[in-house]
Amino acid sequence: MNNDENPRSEQPEGGAPAAPDAPTPPPAAEVSGRQRLKAGLWPPRLSRAQLIVAVLLFGLGLGLAIQVRSTSDDSALRGARQEDLVRILDEVDDRTQRLEDEKQRLDDQRTELENSSDQAEEARKQTLEKERQLGILAGTVAAQGPGITLTITDPSGAVAPDMLLDAIQELRAAGAEAIQVNGVRVVANTYFSGDAGDVEVDGKKIEAPYEFTVIGKPQDLEPALNIPGGVVQTLEKEQATVLVERSDEIVVDALQPAQRPDYARSSSP
Image 1 (tube, rainbow, N blue to C red):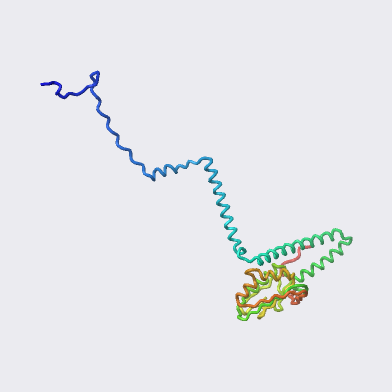
Image 2 (tube, one colour; image 1 turned 60 degrees about the horizontal axis):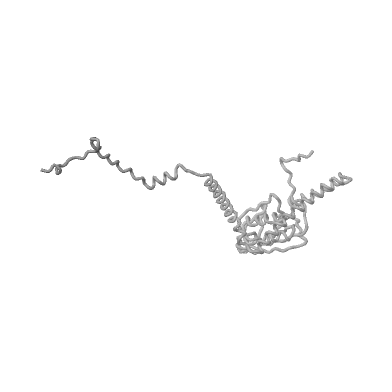
């Protein structure tokens, strides 16, 4: 029998037995995509360059938002015709000019008082002139001068008191100095009441046609009524007819009684 055929274990040199193979470690748990995304985003790792870019983008977005808002606010004028825009611009220029003229007039009065040899007499003249002006504004004295006549015909009885009040406010904003409506003087505390077709001014009933007699610069008053979406267009939507006539000589002679204040007293010595 051949000994070579007998199985035998091979031993390493030196006579030491061979070490058994190490056990294979279990496979690591597979990391999900959501976990990898979370690990990449948090905690945030921003470089200085990324932070600067973020601040610039925020500023750009804020500027665009403000620009869009400003553009939307001007949408009413964006749709206006060129001649309407020119008229609105002229009206703004006229208001600016009136304010500058008033400032110049006050400066001239101050200069006259400072340079007048008889300051007491000059002060008396200016006081009388101021009294006359205040009387016109208060409606206690008659007035005359250039202006317009605004006539509103209301065949359907659809013109409401607030529409007439809007006309008063627009005229005042355009520089009207004295106004009367159907024989009623309009002053600071004048009010309109009632319903459409049944209008009262300061408690006095007035009927159509409504006639506004206005003293002021005609070149300012008429365009103010005809601006897009203004008094004339609003009244015409109610089937009313509006007629504006300029005149070099308008008389406002309806008067309001002078009222003595109950509580207010002059603080001048």
